[in-house]
Length: 292
Ligand SMILES: Cc1cc2nc3c(=O)[nH]c(=O)nc-3n(C[C@H](O)[C@H](O)[C@H](O)COP(=O)(O)OP(=O)(O)OC[C@H]3O[C@@H](n4cnc5c(N)ncnc54)[C@H](O)[C@@H]3O)c2cc1C
Image (tube, rainbow, N blue to C red; front, side, top):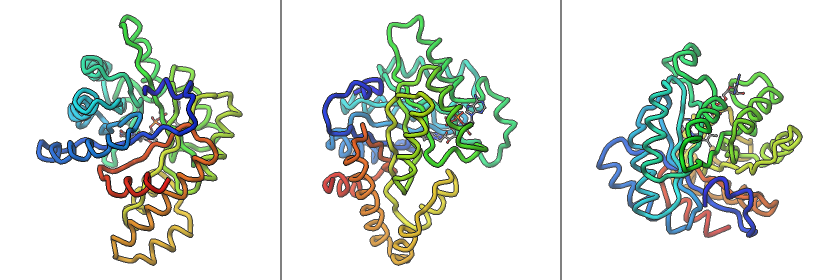
């Protein structure tokens, strides 16, 4: 199923999508192939493949997304970040995506790498994801194929945004430029998602908003990720992870239970899909999907 089909989805069950990151080298890719085959057994609608900011690892993103689509036979999406990239670099990636017959793109600005400052924004052709979406829609005008485009949404507001109002207004720019769906940043408290959907609807946006969930694997990991993207760790989750201490097996169990409970409530409330940040692992996802 392409991103653009989420809107007209008829069946009640939510679509499942998985997000993986590209391998660093060939031997990692061989391992990833096994992981992808296992993920495909869960019949996801789409497997999406992340992309380094400033185009790092662009070739690998395409290679993995093509493997998913053309070898495994599951629909795939390439994430495409525009920060620090020229229009030509973006077009080369779009040509590659087209050649590999991939129909879905997650169109993003990309994070500003720590070693760079905000000046990086002015070094590339596009400063924000809405411009990338606009560019993709212009690019495909002469082509037979229309891409299905997902953009990022932030239930706890984007970390750089001064206010929710501004962040939602900027989301609207991506929607007006031609996005088909919104996939959210991960969150650990569903209330943020439900409030966010209300804000999005109040702004006149009627696209599907797919919640992004990430099963926690360790205390250290959750602290690092939440500080990077400004996600709150609820005190109940913190307590359970502290209780697990250095026992990674216990921490994984806490993460599975947390993600399962979030997914159950989201499904009960009728979300159109769930996007799982699987971090190139399968055992935790298997347990979560079995239990929901
Ligand atoms: C589902 C998902 C997948 C992701 N995949 C990747 C990935 O593969 N690789 C990667 O590097 N990162 C990825 N990210 C992280 C993402 O790149 C960062 O969160 C980045 O900081 C913002 O990207 P964006 O596309 O939301 O940017 P934007 O929509 O451009 O927003 C960035 C900030 O600028 C503001 N803004 C937006 N438009 C305008 C405008 N026109 N004028 C002024 N201000 C504006 C926004 O309010 C926000 O604060 C992903 C995030 C999500 C939710």
